[in-house]
Length: 56
Image (tube, rainbow, N blue to C red; front, side, top):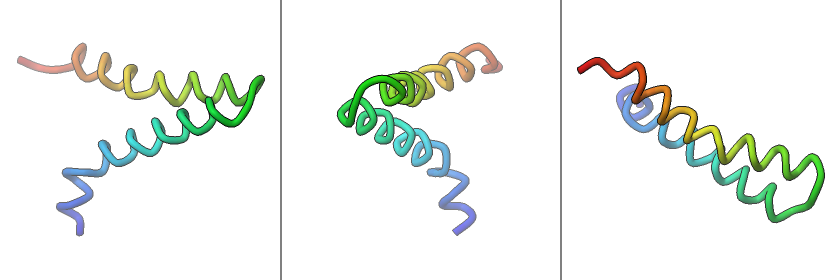
């Protein structure tokens, strides 16, 4: 099971965060909008961080 989590742990986490953001955007306004913005921006922030710290 450890090998599975090493490979798929981060993608599963990012998918769950994105799903929470999409549901929060559908549920309501106010704080829900802020939560959806944060959750939907998280995968983009991870992508930028990986591209900037990538060693090539």
